[in-house]
Length: 197
Image 1 (cartoon, rainbow, N blue to C red):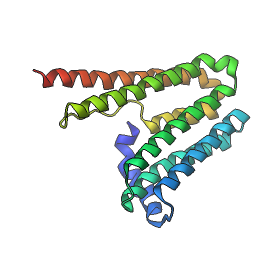
Image 2 (spheres, helix red, strand yellow):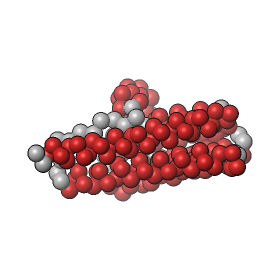
Image 3 (cartoon, helix red, strand yellow):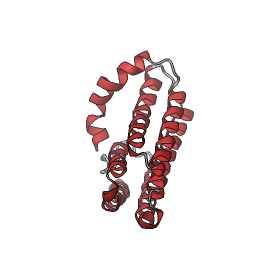
Image 4 (cartoon, rainbow, N blue to C red):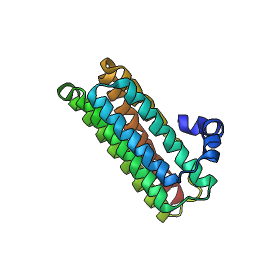
């Protein structure tokens, strides 16, 4: 939701000026974002929350920058898109693992729910995208999900900096992610029925 409403101003003011000066390829920026996210997860597990939060913010920024650089320098490609999506999921999984490792015994259930909800959400996005394309639903527009990457990072950073609130935040995160998945599937089913009337 935040992505959908603020991404234009954010990219114009904070990302595009850097993209114009950047001499790294979009794929290299994607890899740097991945490395920043993985080191952030390591810092979480080692008990260095400030470093973890800063590196996760850097990873999120680089994830914004790579796409802008790709478009600005005409580097967009299917390979770059696949790499970007794969690296995004790696960062998210690593951060969840890092959050779990802070206290495995106490956090196991909450972390499992976070990972399970994320898995179902990714599945819902993939299958609806595949079948929407096969059915040529060109006029179908999905509404923004409750949980996009920006919201996920906000949750992660608060979890990192406020360990005592992890359980409640993890359950809230899982619920919102699962609701986003159900909304996506529900929208697909609704449009599919309309198209067959």
